[in-house]
Amino acid sequence: MTSQFFTRQALAVAAAVILGALAARAEPQHGIAMYGTPALPPDFVSLPYANPDAPKGGRITFGENGIFDSLNPFVAKGSAAAGISALTVETLMGRSYDEPFTLYGLLAESIEVDDARTYAQFTLRPEARFSDGSPVTVEDVIWSMETLGTVGHPRYQGAWAKVAKSEKIDERTVRFTFAEVDRELPLILGLRPILQRAQWEGKDFAETATEPVIGSGPYIVGPYDMGSSITYVRNPNWWGAELNFYRGTQNFDEVRYEYFGDGGVVFEAFKGGTISTYRETNPAKWASVYDFPAVASGDVVKSEIPHARPSGIEGFVFNTRRAQFADWRVREALLTAFNFELVNQTLNGGAQPRIASYYSNSTLGMQPGAPATGPVLALLEPFKADLLPGAIEGYTLPVSDGSEANRANIRAASDMLAEAGYVVTDGVLTGPDGAPFAFEILLVNGADDMIAAASIYVEGLKRLGITATITTVDSAQYKERTNTYDFDMTHYIRSLSLSPGNEQMLYWGSAGVTEPGTRNWMGMNSPAAEAMIQTMLSTTDPATFRDAVEALDRVLISGRYVIPIWYSQVSRMAHRKEFKFPERLPLYGDWIGFQPDVWWYQE
Image 1 (cartoon, rainbow, N blue to C red):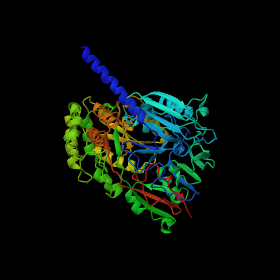
Image 2: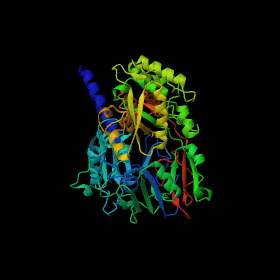
Image 3: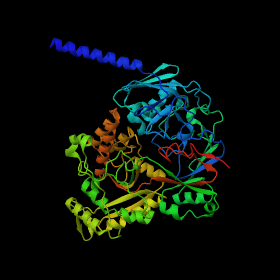
Image 4: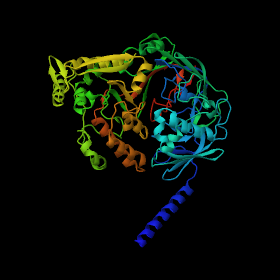
């Protein structure tokens, strides 16, 4: 016993010495990658997809559907104006969208982590300034992290809960020590907005705000009409204008957002010249309705931007908190009754591929219909008893014949509903409780394609004896209802990256079953999904990471939480001819960090 005790004690001492040596070897770096090392050296000239010689000037105007009633985008309350965070507020580090997940220094000139990433230490640039000229301090950083993580939007709170200690090392250096293993945490903290502590003294941060946020970004809030429009004006004294990360970016003198009550009106405003650029999500419209005079004269240019990012998931989500959607067989039946082929042909001319996996268009997702094997199977095996059919065996979405009747799929859906205890009486489907099967599809005003898709679906459901109604609301009501999960079914989009991490817990974590404001709209509660996410966050092996993502994908797609629709392998952007972008496109294509970031105005 004594010998064994001293052996364990010696091992503990040795481990401490090793960890201390690793910490001692940790050195400040100009960047950090989730896996491997940053692609760009410390003295890089500019991001590879930016034009370092891009001219400055001009104004770009975007169109938004809805309204805004707040200038604080960092809390759950209210609908904040577009652009505030991206244009006026900065983070410690900035993301290159030409790599899966790599950050380079912005407000921080360097980051230091140990091999195990048990802490992250950031050293601020001495020249970093807020827009009012005051320096960005360690105190601002610590206050921002804690405030966002405690009273800010729920999306910030999960990561902050994993921070054991934050401390000021010196006047320019702050260290965060972590309470658990999560290799993504240094990157997550590197991307947290840094706000000015002094601005919020004596104010309730959790409330909506009508006073512009004081940030350190390239723009400041200019003229705005609450709910209707907002203009961001380049800060002539912006501290970061010469930073290599920013070279060739933030090129417009003004960035403006105009708000409209209907999505169709946004397009008409573009045709009329009120807004500068328009993203077209419908390939049939892209081919048929861009024949207005400005296109014919060359004043408007059509550009297609390819990308290599995952499809993510888009479609109609079931709220499984509702008793009628708790049974997976019911969800499978309603998914089978959705006539994707008819909807796609009607709205898109059949041109768009269907989302078959949450990670379609990438190497991360499962292959439809293929069984889990090898390490992926090993990750799923401990949860086998609780997994739904298809997670291990393989799952493929139902395919219709494209006819309006959709007879084979309607018969299959009817059989599944009967198996779940539903019967048709006098043309009305009733459940085990005897109540008619009826539900509401909640959509936002102006979502024309989704309203059209839902309308086709509603007609198909009538063949099953199901009454589905479409309710449209304005954007403020929509946000309130989805924040509190007050819906049966609604339109659902979750964009996914090539380096999924902590945000996955916000999307699929069990806390979202009851906690308002998360992104877990479907209300899923899956220990298997959470275990896969933990593996993704803790592994240092890229192969294990990919296996865990595929395993998570299998849990999600076989959960039948969403009726998937389509994705696009290109972004279709129409814009005024004066607006240019580099020929060298980023890995993520037209995504965050592309427009307006690397665009410029040129006569």
